[in-house]
Length: 192
Image (cartoon, rainbow, N blue to C red; front, top):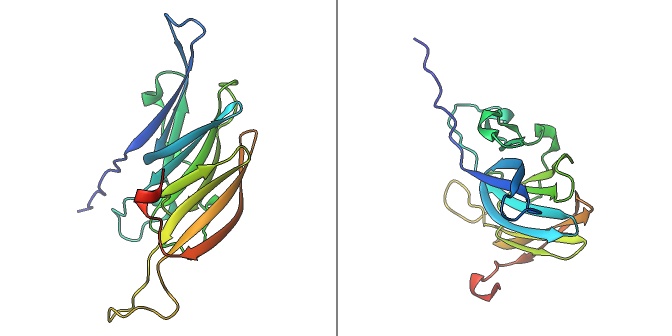
């Protein structure tokens, strides 16, 4: 007897673009769903940039890439009829060493002027914890935890560090620019 796999359940963040020129009767122009949890967003010029953390469900033995890549769907109004698809191709996901490959960060931009413009997406391995944005760049900080061997001993040259990844923002385009790191982690009490 064949055992059916568990269904894939997802938490999703939904973005809705409205035309509010008639404030008494706003018109829904576009809905975009991203699998994962909303972290933050920024409006720069005519674009809204969103940062989403996604935690894949490893519910199958030996999952393939499409089983764990975050899902995405969009439509005009009744989005429930749209099929969710992987947000990017597996070969388009970036990896920033030394982050543990357990989750994903999606940076997406949506035009607030043209509801038909393609949603631009950049996906990397990791889990964002803090974000800073200027008019031209977005920085994501995430903690890389120490690694231990099978005996519980700290591996040589591994220590807790903060990895900061920089992305260039240009009229909706999101491009990886570079990364740096510093020992330690960001104190949540000091973040505004």
